[in-house]
Length: 339
Image 1 (cartoon, rainbow, N blue to C red):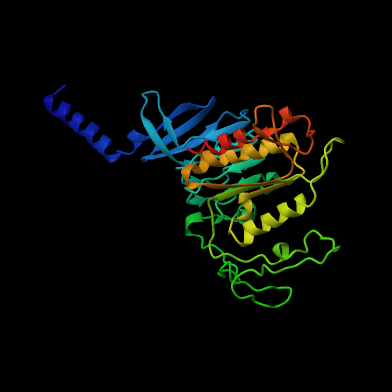
Image 2 (cartoon, rainbow, N blue to C red):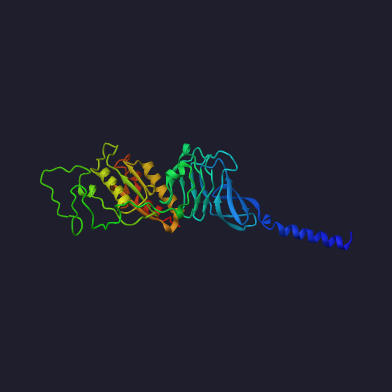
């Protein structure tokens, strides 16, 4: 072979390489995270998760993955439609840092019960969710569930928050809707109950005259447990607990400015329901990290055990069976998992 032909061949190879510089970065690899295999695609400098184990029930989608050479990549998008396979996942937690959910992404998730969408998401493509298999959404208040189920594309960080026209009032300056009177100097504390008059739940001014706050608290999450009726015969009920819980729920929406998706209310919560609420808090903490704030409201029986540890008594547990209560320490530990 002549020297000219060799040089020409080398030049041709170099030109081909230069003309397709981005193709060199395109590659697929599998990354195992918390026992689940994720199929990752890197192309044009963008890392996308395109599939994971179809039989996995609880899945946490990582925001950072590594290839076999231990090189790390920031995941920017989830695109699970191209594999066209049915997934058995019941819970999906998307880690903070992922910015896009591709169109049709969760169309094949028939068993999906709950999904956690972080506040880092900037775009959700059209028909990302199938309305026939609508899960429970935990997501920023700037995302409307109705938009997702209607198949609309959503751009959360560019979506203006809808403001109630009656919001913006100071807590000490509100109108008594029942009487049309605006009290001066804050809430009227001179209410007197005549002797012998029974209180009807929901009729107190605290229940009815709930002021509208100025702020929206998109990253504040709340669980409300109101145990009024206990199933065990040796455990008395807690009068007005249910109404108190409902009133606090309304304060969360109207006064504190929490989105409805951020509040979980359970009346007469069983042991398993209480554990599930704590699990929801933990999932939210993992998704939102230090950006999240938490409120916990509990109305019901609480009993100390023999060591002095306070236990919350679920509605299906006897007040004399303190060992089956939920320890306050467990609640604190759950809230302490914020990363």
